[in-house]
Length: 160
Image 1 (tube, rainbow, N blue to C red):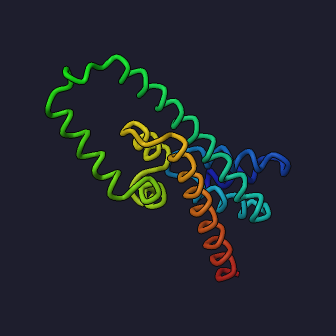
Image 2 (cartoon, rainbow, N blue to C red):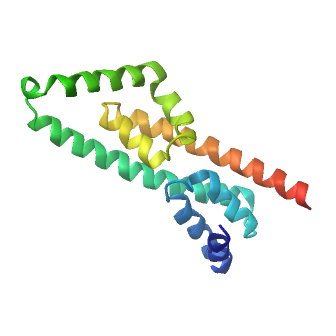
Image 3 (tube, rainbow, N blue to C red):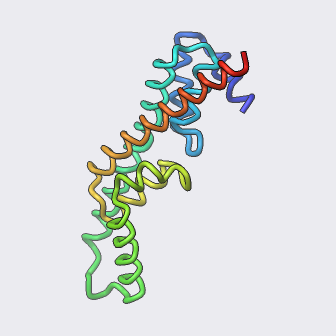
């Protein structure tokens, strides 16, 4: 963590937003740690938030649309009668879970278990609409970023 903070601090002030965006594109760091690094580096909270959201959202969007393309190509070559029963049952189970919690639930609560760079493509690979996934992932990324900003500001007020 200290090395990442030093890296953002070491960037010219005009490029720190790019450093925060780059860190936020990394799985497990995402929009909930990017604002922390930006605020500690001296960026205004809103600039740190926007940078983190953009970095995380661009990475997730690239993965979502790439996964959609791969899924479409794979399904176009697959004959439904050739799908083994075990694979068909597994797909149905995954679809039931997605139906139960929905894209909004998985998008917003998913970061408790996996990074958004994994949960978003997984939802698309299970058949969720890529546009719906991206819309809810953006909501999730913004919410988690706002939570990070609020927590960072609160922690800094407690420390000082």
